Image (tube, rainbow over all chains, first blue to last red; front, side, top):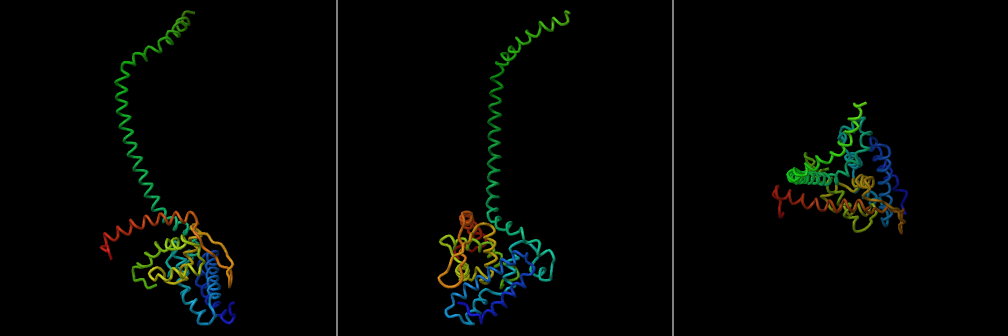
Length: 172
Length: 114
């Protein structure tokens, strides 16, 4: 397994990473460091035999801790790395919610398109239905001219029913 | 980052890289080192292996990938990444969008057939 002689090289790299990540929110910093610690442990176990050069190559391939942290910070809209490096206080607070905003956006572009299509279809549908309803209304109006007389006769009996009472009242 | 003043490579990469990860995971689950090394072979895609971990973390939080720990024959347990259903859908969507996007850009920028 891992040769403890090379642990120091790894620990130095990890503490440089931790330092670079100082401005990330604590849970994000812990996650990042844990992910990279895990990568190094797994990659070291694959070295046969484990040599100092091998361990250094793993770290070289991982890259500059500052660049890795910049990538974590760029996950979300926020102050550019330069501003954060100089200690912008907002840097630690802003990143939290942003990742959720970043990734769904990839699908968001699509759903936005879908939404516009739905709106367009709805507008067209309303126009068509409106025109049809208008046309039907015209027809109906022409048709009901005859039936209006029928409608007029309907309240007749009620009025007639009412009439005696209204006649009776003033009679008293 | 050898990226030029426009940060062009980095902005292009950022949009596409996470879907490359999803695509690699669509065939089989992979553990971190394996996944990161696979991606790093495409130089245009990554700056360094380490920069992929923030991206993997984002994909986990988005719910597009899930992870499970598995014992390894030698060395510490490995965390395997696999696609979730949502991740699979996101990848399918990207594949469709990408073709349309690529064709449109190629046509206008004049890179068709290159």
